Amino acid sequence: MTNPEIERIKTALPGWVEAGKPFASEGKVASYIPELSKAPKEALGIALISKDGETIAAGDADLSFTMQSISKVFTLILALMDNGEELVFSKVGMEPTGDNFNSMLKLELVRPGIPFNPLINAGAITVSSLIEGADAADKSARILHFFKELAANDCLDYDMAVYRSESETGDLNRSMAYLLKDNGVLNGSVDDVLDVYFRHCSINVRCADLARMALVLACDGTDPLTGQTLIPRRYVQIAKTFMTTCGMYNASGEFAIQVGLPAKSGVSGGILTLVPGRFGIGIVGPALNAKGNSRAGVRLLETMSQELDWSMF
Ligand SMILES: NC(=O)CC[C@H](N)C(=O)O
Image 1 (cartoon, helix red, strand yellow):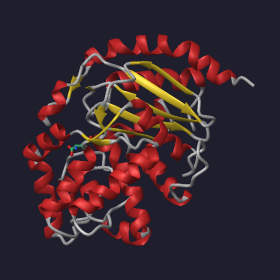
Image 2 (image 1 turned 90 degrees about the horizontal axis):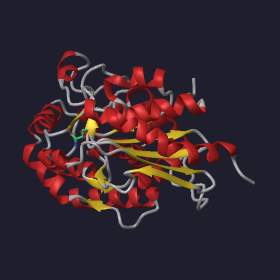
Image 3 (image 1 turned 180 degrees about the vertical axis):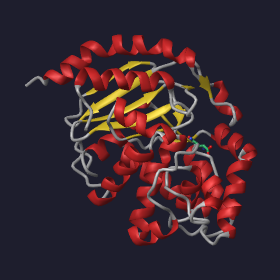
């Protein structure tokens, strides 16, 4: 039986992507991690996977890119699976900051030492320290294994050039980690925690990988294509709530109004989003707007949400 929504997307998607592409010229590719500046500025690609396994892709969907902040959603889930809610939320809060993703302002001003939420850098670095494992290498191996399962792709691996580039230049994250350590929030050595963090940020993916990971969230933790439950439903609920309130950094309110779906972006220009119960979606568009979200990617999602009436609200 044909699904009219899927047929509509198949027909219209190439046109929506073409209409979104020019918006990339309003954005800038991130360069504070020098290796990221090599990404093609004008690119825009998307892949969707439906709960019945139908994949639809358009534009530069084959471009590979690093997950960056998108990985924070899944390390949070793994930390919750490893430690439970009580412990995780004794180290990291549940509120949006309204500040940039790499700001350390509120670490000192309000509730000293505890990051506001797990999707800002300070929160995600704290979450990295909560991943179970004998040492940093073991923790990173567990994260990579979990991501491979969620993406149903055994070939996922690090982009070592991006990893090295961030390790060499990540002094702001390093200073944040020292502050967290001094406040008694971080377990383990700062170098080890940052190694785990930089590695999961540099896991290389394509749009279809993000779409498959998002599909698991869209289906409450069970991969509908294998029937395997990979995440307890409660932790999916927590992750999707953070994506809605903090996933697009300090543009999450605007995104909730214009698009109305749980989403997470990264500075490589990736966006992972989902339509509850129906689709997992991965997007890449390396040119970013002032808040650090893919300019053309956000535009494409605004169009799709309006055309397909996707807002949850
Ligand atoms: N917003 C992002 O994607 C930030 C992730 C990046 N690895 C950083 O720590 O700066």
